[in-house]
Length: 92
Image (cartoon, rainbow, N blue to C red; front, side):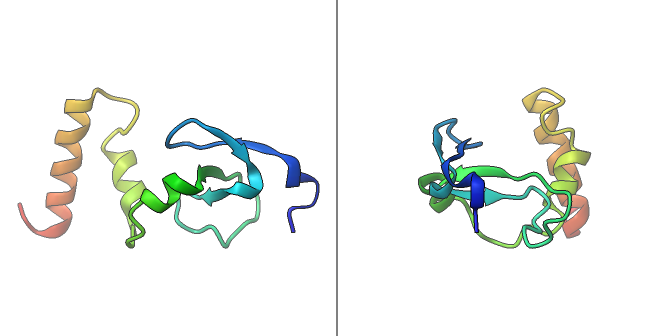
C-alpha cells in the first residue's frame, strides 16, 4: 500500500517529532482524507493522534481561516473565532 514511501520519515504537526510514515496517521485539514486526488497530507504521530478530539468538525477549517488562524495574534484570533462561532450557533 505504501510502496516506496514505506521507509519515509514524516514530522508530526502536533509535537514536531519525526516518525516513520508507517507509524503515523494522516491528517487532512479539510476533513476528507478519502478523496486523495491531488492531495498532500500532514501527519500526526500515534500518541498525538490518540490525544486528538475525533468529533465531527464540519466547517471548522473554514471558521479557522475566517478567524485568521496563524495570521494574526492570539487575542485577535480568539475574539474573531468566538464571534464567528457565536454567530453560527445562534448564541449572539
